[in-house]
Length: 60
Image (cartoon, rainbow, N blue to C red; front, top):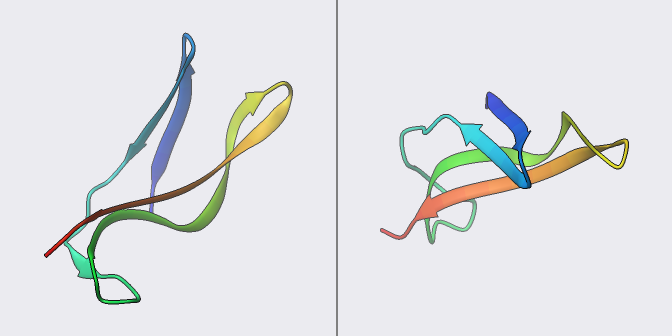
């Protein structure tokens, strides 16, 4: 899933495309955006890359 990450001032800004709602692995929610695990970014904090694990979902 394409994701844009940047630091604006003192905020970490994450932009990720929405997708068609699909059932989660448990089937309890519908996933609308996900990194599908942890994703290492190009953004650095204290010289180290930021890793993001993101799941956005809705309850049916």
